[in-house]
Length: 101
Image (spheres, rainbow, N blue to C red):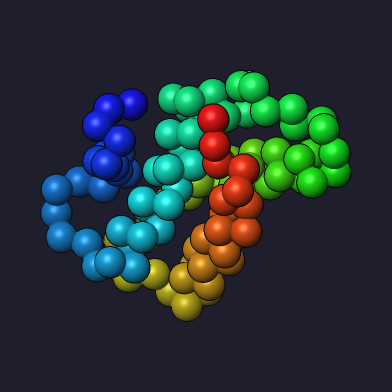
């Protein structure tokens, strides 16, 4: 995917977004791109190599499924929704080591 220094965020339009929202969308766009465009889950990684890899694959699948079903609210996120998004971001960061193809 060239150029490698540009990230197109499919879930955002050209309107203004606060950076907390852009961060959420950017991180999950990276996950989506890895899975959809780079074949992360079906590529050369041996996801059955050990417990760490099996757990990472399961986590990647869960995070991806959450993002695919994620719906934004028209008004700024409620505290509960914001906390859920934060937890998902934290989970993604914890397995970022697995986002390579």
